[in-house]
Picture (cartoon, rainbow, N blue to C red):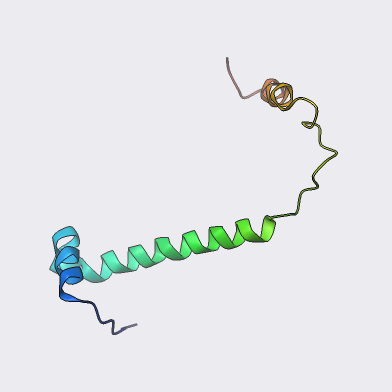
Length: 79
């Protein structure tokens, strides 16, 4: 699909330096793809906020001990 986008001359010049005139579309598409992925991740983070209770966890008393216990329980871990 074609899309018309207006960009100022300085931005186009920087785009050409980084991507080359023949790769503008691919470069812009990749940047948009990354930006949309980032936005989706932030949406997921925002929707997860407040989903875990503030107390009643195995790590409440001693978080460091809980982390060590979790690491030792993972048989794939070495060291």
